[in-house]
Image (tube, rainbow, N blue to C red):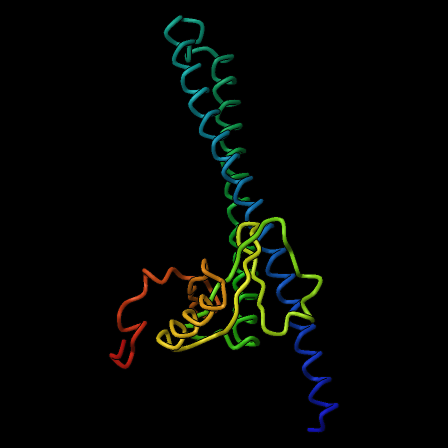
Length: 208
């Protein structure tokens, strides 16, 4: 390939990465909102169920409700109908959430393949800020990567498959003045705490 073709391909790769990242962030936000909505509906459902049961028991105890009467049977049927409707809505929301999760996983899998995130990777995080967002300068961030987790923008440098090399790189970064830097790890494109990794994961060759 000519230098022009290589440069054109790099630009296309950057644009594709930006589009994937935006879609991942959108789906994450949507997933979080749907989870909150389902959680609220579940709380409402449990409250209504408890309320209806408690109310029914009180009315029966007071003799206001007599299940032998036709009017009482209609009221009971109304309660049962409302319960079934709430239960159906809850099932429908769970199905929607599962669908969103499948879409998010598909995007993450595609992102993992196109960005070569398969397997265990290590990066050095040099900062995390809520008030700073450099996504408008993605094309200018040649050596710095920006990832967003829980509305916090995190900036990393370097990418390693060897944890020992990442530690050496971290020492150099700290000598440059980034004293709060530390190593983060991802597995198949998903963040994973280093403390959850085994010695074999960190040192597959047995050398520390």
